[in-house]
Image (tube, rainbow, N blue to C red; front, side):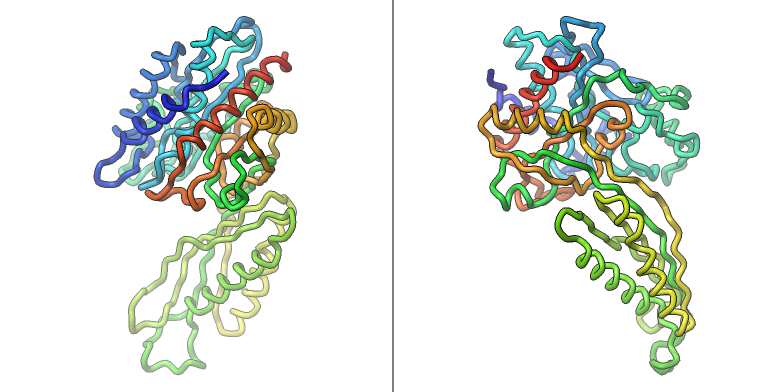
Amino acid sequence: MAINGERLWQNLEALSTITDPDQPWTRRAFTDRYQEGRDWLKCAMQSAGLATRLDDAGNLIGTLPGSEPALAPLVLGSHIDTVPSGGRYDGILGVLAGLEAVQSLAESRIQLRHDVEVIDFLSEEPSEYGISCVGSRGMVGDLSHEMLNLCEPGGERLGDAIRRMGGTPEALSAPLRKQGDIAAFLELHIEQGRVLEENHVPIGVVSDIVGIHRYDIVVSGQADHAGTTPMELRRDALAEAAGLIKAIQQSALDQSTGDNYLVATVGRLNVFPNATNAIPERVEMVLEVRSNDSHLLQSFFHPILDQAKRDASTLGIEIVATPLSEGLPTPCAELIQSKVWEAAQTTGLKAMSLTSGAGHDAVYMAKIAPTGMLFVPCHEGRSHCPEESITPQQATNGCQVIQEALKSLDNDLG
């Protein structure tokens, strides 16, 4: 059977245009604009015949009943929040393609054995409260008391923000779902990279999702007059930080070979006193390392740091690095990968295996259920920016594959 690609595209356009008008395409979690998008989605789910509810973590869930209600549900989904100016398809494709997949089944009077849930997870993108994947963390019991007490710049607690979105933060001390409560989870997403487009392949079967380690790094030297301090007497923190950044970049380039996916980025930098005529005294920066290899992820930075410390000490400069977070790689379930491969073949679409270099709600869902992902290309790999773009056919391709995989999982899983 065919999905309604035209309706899917119309829904993508309709939801994406619910954006801050002065900063397209922006729909930040916990804002009035986000709630407007959720209200639209809730109506779309109900119009498609799904029963809707909010769980205690603030996730919006639409359910299409199956013929055997005792079976654990099959789950599709992603998120509808964005980063600032974040793009029109990141996240919402997975939600709306999931909705279209089940709506077209219902319209064709095809009832699966399992209930099918389509979930919009609350706040997948990094939020003003300091963490990402709020809804999926909450569902699996990964929102700690400390996380719920994190505050955004205006002083509101994350727990209170979840309550404002319809959740119940007091219920999040334990998992909302446990092993066995979900038969399988499948997430469709734009690739957010160039691999599929450059290889002219319409479907990516995700083999694993990278782990992410982040470090807070402080380089301390001495501020002096930029005009009167000879070069050999300087303790320039920024110059030393620049050398460290270059060493990180070169080491990541050298070690990212073959099947070893590794990227390392210093994307945040604060310089003090940050004056034209003053030698920098202090540099604060954050390093992020991503890899699908646990050993590589854990061993990458420490040799670079040790060498940088030795070099800096000869100049009277100190380097201190503190771990901020340490997330390990997440393998996708072989069952789900095989079903996506078969579904691509059934729909006549070429597929290839690849690693997800970005984090997703699937990372947390994998803690409680067999989990997998599939990607469709996005133009020039652009994402998290206003230029993010896909075609109607790419959206249709992804939706067709998840529907085929969904039917196959329904047949095979108890």
